Image (cartoon, rainbow, N blue to C red):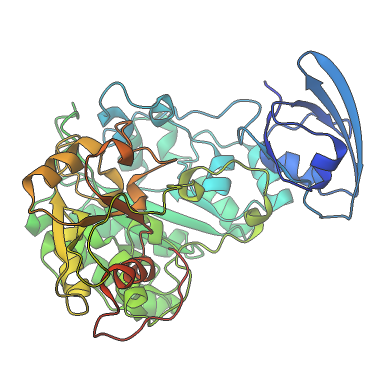
Length: 469
């Protein structure tokens, strides 16, 4: 177990005024050694905070008086201080097994820790969940949580997870729901294994056994060129169409029984099947937006200025964990705001959008009616290969290859979703690309504002302000 290390101290905060410095190691708070940032945050909520700090081997005691609930102003370097609970499943479809060598070490860590599920929206299978974990989740109301279900049939779930506890661990899901914990579910659909009749059976099982689930996302198997699992393959168009059909039928059943659709297919399925995307209104509160559920309709509505809502899980209870480092969906994507060397006057610039294979299927229909002069550069994902075609997995070398082969533009707009701390997954940066690139938020309102800034407001409706998705 290690102690929390101070990563940053907010200016003029109680912590800074008390003398806390970046690099300090917190040995205890009010006599308690916290095991994670959740417990840390609960301890510093108190009006009287006693810190014991290790500063380069020197023990320092600091006493801080503040209002109850007032932020202390410290960001710690990690979310888990004792030890991240790693995943002991061996799923054939796990994308971590399909990564090439040489990427950031953190990308290869398989976690199955409910605390990271609570903090960052990571999915847990509950195969390492315990009675003590359940007691803590209930007592501290660690909600929402995110659970990978994949199948409700015990034998099939055991097979999919390659873990003998796979068939029994969903009992914890029942216990969480019974105690009023908000849970969002996920099904990774592997063609020929848990699709077709097995998918229908799983959804009927969810309706019967877990009707309190907030929602369930069905996402297609992602297969990179580095996969060594013989059974893992991309969906055919017919298989994707069948998933869309089953989800549609089950939505009607859930709507009739529960009064809500609950289960949704990711946008990828509709694009793979060549089917029309559902309406914006059919997605409810878009709580699995980050999982690709309704992302196109949300983008469209924001681009047209028809909504100013923030889509995704409303981070209620854990939003106050201000000490947690920004990771996962909360990570800082990019600090770059200015474009690199943009010639010509506003309104005369030739601008293109850098987008993924899937993005190229939907962006022109949304953007071109308002900005017909905009170009599009589709990036084929050769780095990961396989059926990988989402914007979040675009890397620098593939973007460079696409730009070199495209017509010349004055400026290229890049969605920030493919960056983390200004870096692509392959370790390269935007600055390493010899092209005039501007990083823009990955949402409709952000793109609309960027295009209007360079080209002038288009003929379509002027958008209202909208938060970044």
